[in-house]
Length: 196
Length: 218
Image (cartoon, rainbow over all chains, first blue to last red; front, top):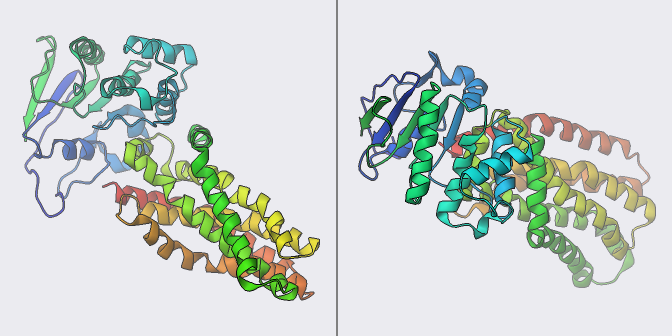
């Protein structure tokens, strides 16, 4: 429920390792709400979310270790540089990467020469790249929940992100994302569409 | 947890204007009273502890509003909720960083302000120590209020309405400590009560604020 409006009901899905779940729906259908419920940021009125067979509330810290959630907003602090923002995000996720590793991830995300610029001076697409750079760090958590990850990305960056998602799926990870178009990954990989 | 603490300190240093604003407010408010009330020394000496304490309270309220609001606005608050570190510890780290930049700064400047009121040096010492123990309590209790009012319109005023009544005991015993010294009574009891409030809020406030944040972000 969002306020007093029931957004969706009867959503029932089991996602296996190596599967991509694409949530699709019109604007306002509740895609972001569903993704946030999957991350335990909000509670569904009825029903439950389970990870590895157990409810989320019973394994909060372990679940957070297994999860990367990248929401609609790039979640960057304007006063910090791209490098500092990425380090902060990794520390919150329990990883302690060294600076060279972070620089490499930012370069791979297309932000070479911009790592030390304050996030305020980055464009929308560049901010999203900083947020997505977190996906490149090893060890990658098994569950990725991404809200409109292709938003604001140019063609090159979209291709790069597809490669990153493919790598995660081949490793046996799970990707849940919202997108208005089907995700153009390898047909040999399993893609499940959930329409709201 | 240390990452969040260092990050918040770094942010406060980069936004020096915001951090200094509360401190200047403290100085101005405390300095207005002698100007408004008149120069009679005995009167100034009596009101000094209360005035400095109230000014410290109000200055803390100014900066508390930003404790979680900035993170909420740019989306980083959600990431804090999804951290592998338990949320109460993260909240405690944020409150500690806030105290270092506001409460501690106020405590260091307060002796200078007390000079305006003609307080004897022993009283200034007691005032500073009472602020040192009491301002963390303000940051902690204020953090609960900040968590409750995250994303709410008019959060600033609402925060003051919620938090100031809860901080009244701290004000009473903090200012009362200096008065007790002036009256020749033992100050130890006041320190003990302030210390007890500090310990209680150190345990309870992060947990309460974390719960409030989860509710606010649902």
